Image 1: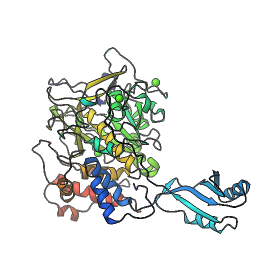
Image 2: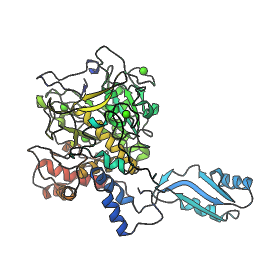
Image 3: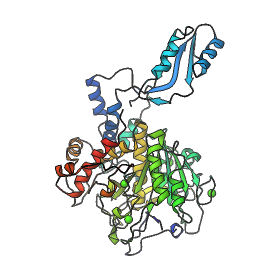
Image 4: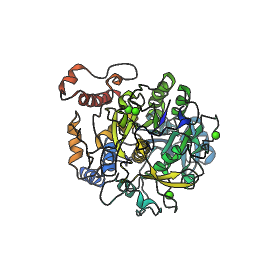
Length: 521
Ligand SMILES: [Ca+2]
Ligand SMILES: [Ca+2]
Ligand SMILES: [Ca+2]
Ligand SMILES: [Ca+2]
């Protein structure tokens, strides 16, 4: 049984469930910027998301990103250049000017942090070649002036940008030119209205599939009660198109968006696995707003194939950087359900996202648990505003709710960070989310300092608002604190350094785990 995490009704016991579901380096310039410039960059990047970006960019700011293309100088004409290209494993992509040619190597990876010395030397040593240089990717920004989206419902998207600063501060990222370009997000749900006028332009068929019917078209099944609107609503939060005169905008309004129709039928282990592993070299972020029953009694999680899909996703997806799985933490607060008993949110491979209301309260449906990594806005009491997004039948709604609405907002924010730095691993992203999350005005009585206190204070002292909020335990379930080879990622000695509370020590351990999992570069 899988439950959709949208729109839980306020009446006791009336949690809505869908019956169908019962089932920059920047790429680096030539050299490391001087300290002064780095500081200015840092100042520029102040701001919630921007903190996210800073943390992501700093390690690579001085690193070159090598492409699989070479500029080669070969006197004597095109035919000779073709022969040289062939001889050294290149394709001649054409003539630039004079005797310069654009070569692309057949086997060298597209982007790499190290140069391909052997290929370079072989080219240079070829007597017909007078000069050759492996091309380095350079970051160039269009010098557009930022203009606020003109969409009619943008003003109602209080959580994206708000003069009172109770927002996700998406505008700071947009102002820097980050809008999700080149990033692909897929919503695993009950389908996506691909021809919705506010989604069509960003719709990506390669990030979409209909697992329920076994065809490539994820169009939702239409019913009188619009039961299958959930996926379309989640999709608009990520990537509704900007400045088209329709509805509002997505957080990452230039990202590509797809949908997998997988909740409108029997949900089996295989259906979940097939959805979680769709096109992992193309899709960057998978967003799921569903899970086991939120009834306070169910303990359930991914079975054999779905587990395997998560593992393959993080190890093989995105050319080894790892697929990013964003998960809604669940709506069982009223039933005292715990998201720690939900094997999807508590998997170390998912970024589990909870909700805060417009006024900064913990919503009545929110489940308190330590596997929650961060919080974004969503619905609250009847007087608080809800989420504006695309709706079935080409409509626009201002009443998307629950943790279902929070996870796609996080997926959109993650898409912005990925645009800024494509080289972030799945694990880097979890760290960015935790370290850059910020209490802002969130009202809750269970704030505690955790093992990451030092990092959190650094973030907290900066004059910024928060993009994602950290709250509560911040630890993953201890049973999961192993790497995928089953090796323990912490030792009792480390535990004893942080005796404050069980949960908090786990946060610290997660950091340790990160260092062990991080690929050595
Ligand atoms: Ca279909
Ligand atoms: Ca729009
Ligand atoms: Ca739950
Ligand atoms: Ca998780």
